[in-house]
Image 1 (cartoon, one colour):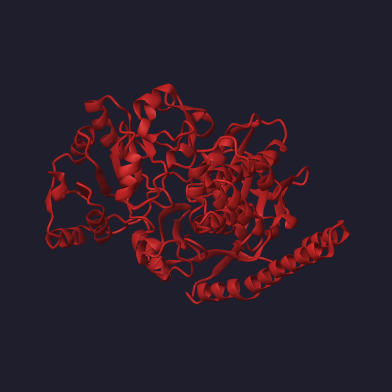
Image 2 (cartoon, rainbow, N blue to C red):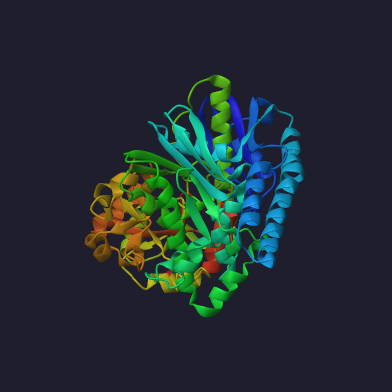
Length: 563
């Protein structure tokens, strides 16, 4: 059975599932070059089908998300309304909270009555049978079928889907049943987004900058005030957004946060935000009981790699699995897997690789190189040559092999550099026009990873996809200081020969010459641009960043700065 999975919200993406196996996946932003693009991803549909060797006529079913009640579930709103009216609040405060509640409900009605049906009509216009699944159900499916083993719990948290802002599911390893959910007005994603905006960043895009800043203030003075905005409801497995503390407010413009920004450094506010998030999510996980529990997570909030580390460290958790495309782009895979199970009664193949996108086209490579005014050669052993360059202290950009599915560059669309230069964080971020405080991540050979990262066994599968941080051992701090953040953690990609054969050969060649097992791996793109996809994208970013070397397919390109 051929299933086309489509997601149409932020980072709209497409996957192709053939007889239960993911064979192609790509985000629209990688093709149209508009970061986090949303809408029906027509170009990605065409490209994914091409990669799978199919036409639209070969598709048995299109799977997507968006199933929800015809209008917001009214009882949670009425419950919140009754609580506000019963509270001993000044009339003007109660009126403000009721107004914000009504605005949120009105927004949900517009989304459920106009936006989502409009997108679904476009999906149906493709002319194939369509399955529509719940937003958080599709997120949960990426946890279940992405990990593909054993029973446990699935937790999803994001800004808001049509059916809530978080959900908790119990799974026996085959199916799953929903235990609880949180409403949109209790959104942890909106909480973090509101702080992101208050600090001068773009919400729903720059939350990672808040996380990066948080490490610079271990004991924030803002914690009590920020923690008062969100909470956990014990025994009900749901989160609470405190309306009286500014959640939910339209456009994420919270006057309480504006007041904080005027009084405290942004590092303090970032740290208070991060610690508040960690505390309330950990409270839910602790509420699951003694365990040990396998915890599978998905949804945009789990792009927060430090949160994922905190969950892996809970005493009742045996393993944390984060689906590599944890945001809304991953809904395409979740919906496709759900349709496969619904229509065949059999489980899909376990997710094994994120390298599911297009490789740079040979003809395009030669066209770009011959007209680009750059020197290039075709080494006999490319991976060995790249290892040699890295060991000699050179920066190498790499655009080779299938592109990664999800937000992380995993070696095929990466910029690589040795990790022993602590100053790289400043000069390379400036060259790429990125924020100077953002840490770089390491890629580490699997055979020594347990000697470099504390707690690796609790998230070994997740560590293949650079989706969690770990505390670093002294050996890691001494060997790769450039990859260790100020709080002593790193967000590694653990490299084995089976999952990443070419990248593994590069690191092996590098270690043979340097004695070191980790290199810096950061995404190959300029700031605010999507990760490069095509040969033309790679040449353009290579020239803009003035890097010395570029691996483009089987060709090694050098710029004048290579010397």
